Length: 81
Image (cartoon, rainbow, N blue to C red; front, top):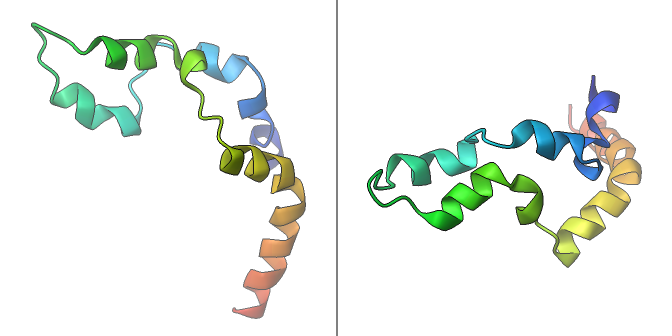
């Protein structure tokens, strides 16, 4: 299961499937939004998630080193159990 999801964020299919879906991180903003005057930026984030990908140095570093970090973190966790 984990191997199936490791590369999903690098492809476009994830964002196509998420279009129009209100995720957990957006649910509070949606609940507090005025239906008579909805936030245009919120609508954009929900309908066009591929345009709002987080692309910071930290995220790029994490994506680049995720494959090598996973076994290292698993070894570290084994020492604590």
